[in-house]
Image (cartoon, rainbow, N blue to C red; front, side):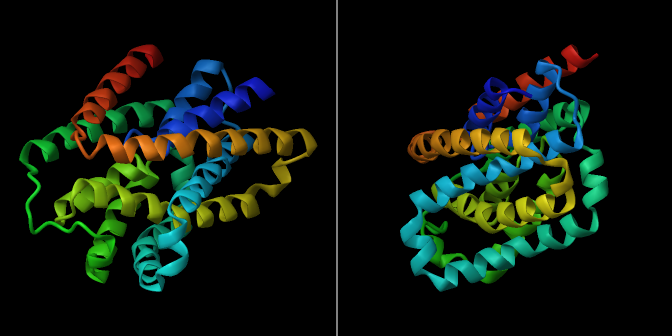
Length: 254
């Protein structure tokens, strides 16, 4: 990997981390297009630069993150399913980081989005403030997030669908998804660094920094755009995109 490729990965990560289209999946597919092998460093790079996008969340939602202790309690409860399963199934999850897995999960997730949006209708009684999310609902959203350990599923996509199904309005489902990314990706990144620190040297660390900073800058713009978008639109376009890109890559792979 060179610096230009690191920047491209940072852009892809920044754009896709908070859209329900799978950032990890898109980075795996990007690596495939660039002819980069899914080496131990490559897999770690794809996880670690996501922290840049997560810091963008902290910047955008700093008032909620640093002033509401109850929100943090709910985020930790929502994070628990992924923490337990991620630690237990780490090696199995890493073995699934393949273009074929991503393509199939993009298509499956896209179909699910279209089905959910077909039946989902926002009601007045649906939750429209993060403070009103119960601990039970937070845990249920966390169960949906744990499904996203399969690359191509999309962490944000899984949690948004979970939020819609338990009665959150689209904007609140998206906001909780963004905030849940903070403990989730901090833990995932930290664990990955501990497992693979021996893969890093001076040049690799520089590439990580480049990808990290690029992802942070791009994610700042994407978060604000996405929150504005879902005020007026559904998630149907993302479902269609997922199916389209999944089919395209299946044709490319085979």
